[in-house]
Amino acid sequence: MGRSSIETIRLSKCATLLISRPLRPTTVFLGEIVDKLNKRCKSRLTAEQAHLKPLPHYRFRDFSKLTVKVTTSSTISVKRHLNSVPSQLIGEKLRVHLYHDRLECFVGQTKAITLSHVYPKTPEGRARRIDYRHIIHALAAKPQAFCFSRMRDDLLPTSQYRELWQRAEQQFDLRHDMQQPIIPPRQHGVDTCDQLLNGDRMTQETAYV
Image 1 (cartoon, rainbow, N blue to C red):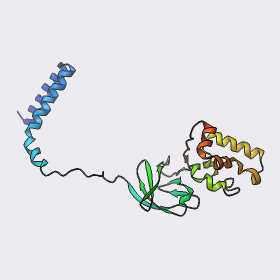
Image 2: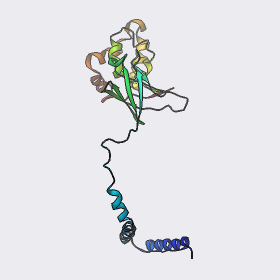
Image 3: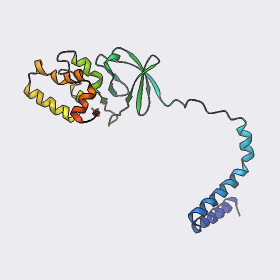
């Protein structure tokens, strides 16, 4: 009888025993089998352990490194993904650690911000995530900057804001009054305005193109 046949018979017997035994004794039975198998290689394991080194303090690198420049629009483009950053970083070169779920951005050796990594819906598409909190103060300081911004629609973070904007377009003169909707966040702080409009901090929506 060949070795494979013997192993097949052993497996069949083990399977029969497993089926016939209740759950807890089966667990004990499996533990006994594992212990027997481990005893066979215990001496070799002991010999190898003498040469093993401690695990490294830091985990292996699971990110890629990139360098990007912050545009005058306060955005960075990484892997078909456009993301806003605080306007204070305009003109800076950021070192980006690109993880599967986030972007950690550094100015020199100092971490400046962590951003979500969003993906396009299609391989040919692009994704963008514009956080109005990053840009609102700079836009509020420039008359009509928000009104004529290419990212205006992305800067309206929720359906409530979009509804307010549509009403404002109907009721006010575009060239004279349209900067008013963004003045309150500048005066009172974006957190306060978020709570007044939505009862909590609003979550910026991701746009796909």
